[in-house]
Amino acid sequence: MKTIYSQALLIFFVLHFSSVLAQSQTIDFTLLSDKVEVAGNDTPLVSTIKKTGNTLTWTQYSNGTAISVAHFTITQTSGNWNAETSRGNINYTTLIEGYRGNLALQGQESGITAVLTLMISDTHQEQYSFVINSITYP
Image (cartoon, rainbow, N blue to C red; front, side, top):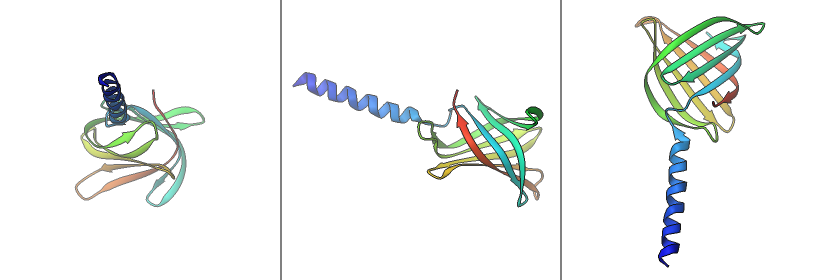
């Protein structure tokens, strides 16, 4: 009986901690997008948003060549993301060259959305809504 209890307890801990590890704020990923909406206009633009550690890198491409690369420092993270299902809600507060920003990532059954907001001033912000084609994890 003691062996069965020990095995049941072990199974519980394995399942519990694998679930906890799947829900994460620290997971790294790469998003691939082929379209971005800016000020209500859809623009065909191939780009990636890559999270590595405390850095987000937004790279824009033209004909397969990187034409613009922006590096954001992550200063705060809230929410959780499940890498096994690519579902959840997670927000990254960022800084780039003194400007505050936010990347909101939402994964649902219908797909993944990513919205990057840059606070240009106290009264002006720019918002980029990405159509996400895929997400990969290292």
